[in-house]
Image (cartoon, rainbow, N blue to C red):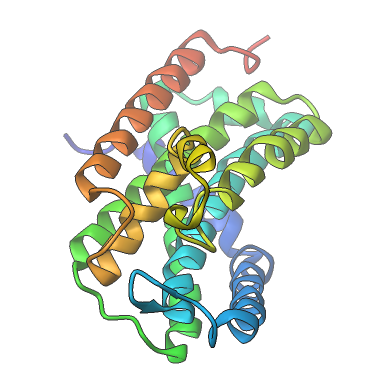
Length: 253
């Protein structure tokens, strides 16, 4: 089916929105990830190996995926809350664009930003060495799916929040803890049994673990399990978001 002009225009508008401030939305997250790598690798590289992989190499895919997830979430959530606060959301809702096209345009733009930042992080950190790209299709699959999941979750946050502080609470008390406790900096095999079980309830853990499998061919759990969990999360979040958009929940007066 040929995409409508409305969908293309909305997608282009969302991509242009983050690209016009690329220093803030792309370069800054890349620099942050590089600083994480410099600090953690300097402290732990000579002491730690994970799954037989040097710690610096182990850390790079985690930082790449963390950047993809956080920036995909930030794109949709910040766009919607800005439109609400400034009052220009009406100009996005007035054109004859279906809720499916509205959803697809925002999520695809968030995936684009997530992949762009992730690629930037990979380029500046790959010089530290150790990456072997064992299964590139797994890398691409989890990067795209992770970006779509967090872009969708960002839409939910943007729809629900009415002020910047509500969105910040969503990000600080839900997204940030889930991201940092997902195995970005460690393998859950190094955790006590209780915390290993807690980690298995964190959906972001499966995205990180599956993405890392694409580089080294080893992971804490089967990549097929990670793929299944990620797919289920994406379907549930997408159905919930589409339902909210169709009803105009907190979007239409």
